[in-house]
Image (tube, rainbow, N blue to C red; front, side):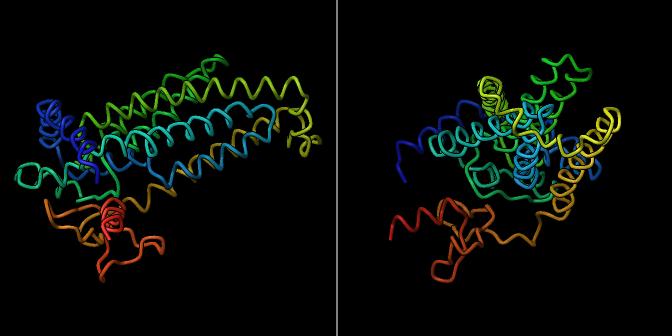
Length: 297
C-alpha cells in the first residue's frame, strides 16, 4: 500500500483528533438501547440495501412524465456520489476506521461494543452512508423546492440524522460524516443539473412524450391516477426502507465474520465472503486487506 496515501489518512486523524473525540464522548455519554435503535433507523437511509433499490425506484420514476425529473435526479446524484466517494476520495484518503485505530481507548471501545459492534468493509473517509443519505435527500429537496411543494425542508433533516447515527454507532469519525455531508450535497447539486440537461433533451426531442408509462392508465380519471401514484410511491418507499432496516436490527456483535488481518491492529472490518474475494491461506479478509495481500503475493 502506498505510504504517501497513508499519510493523508494519518493527517486527518491528527488534525481532527480533538473534534472527533468530542463527538464520540457526546454520543457515547447518551448511549442506551432506545437510541441505538433510533440510530439504526436513520443509518438505514445510507445503507446499500436502501440505496440500490432507490436507484431501481428512480429508473421506474423515469418512465412516467410527471415523475421523470425525480427519477433522473436520484439516479444522477447517487451515481456521482458513488464515484466521488468510493472511486476517488476513499482510496485517496485511506483513513482507517475508528474501531481499528482506537482499540486501545477503553472508553471508546466500550461505546463501540455498546452500540452493537457493527463493522464495515472499507475505508472511513468520507462516510458513504452520510454521502448516500445526503445526495438522495438534497436531490429530492431541490426537485420539491422547484415545484414549490410543501415540506421540502423535511428532506434535509435526514442527512444530519444519518450523520449523527454513524458517529453514535462508533463506525465513523465526526470528520468522516462532515466530509460525507459535503460530498453528498455537491453530488446532489451536480445530479440535479444533469437531470435538467436530460429533461431539456427529452423535451426538445419529444422523447418524453414517447416514453410515458402513464398512457397505460389512460382509462382512469385524473384524480384516481393521482391517488394511485401517491399510494404506489409511498408503498414503494416504505418497502425499500424496511428492506434495509429490518436486517440492520440483527447486525453486528459476535455473529460478524471479522477480517483476519492482525498486524498493526486486529482488523474489525467485516470479512468479504463473496466468491470474488476467496480465502487466502484459509483466512477471510476485508476488501482492503484482501487487496493488500493479493498485491504482495
